[in-house]
Amino acid sequence: MVNADVHEKVAAEITAEMDRLHRAFLTVTKLEITTALRRLGGQPRTRVGRSSADNVEAALERRGYKVFPALADVRTDEAVRIYRRGRASCIRARRRTRSWRTSSVRPRPPISY
Image: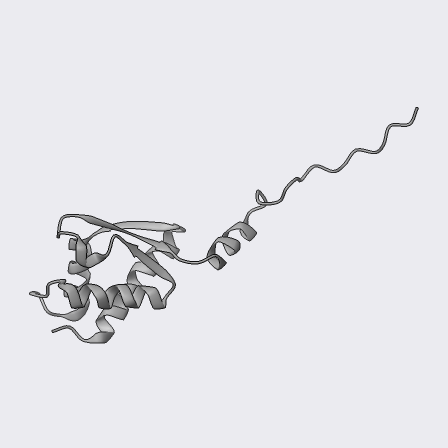
């Protein structure tokens, strides 16, 4: 049995990786999440069952991330996509660049005849 704080540590590790890479989403296999649970929990025989999968997803939800498809619905060798949830992260990302503005060209003065 894995402690509840281990699920939070796995979520923190995944979100830190996404932030480090400046990614809007990250594709990981269920095996990678299982390996992280084993490493952080200190239990080499840990499996990601329905309850552990739900706990990892809940920890990611609390951090503002969503998992698709559900972690409990995939096999060990299949991947899930973890992406940022909500509109606020999109607005922050757009503020960092100038491309979201409608136009950077200054209007021309009127032509006098």
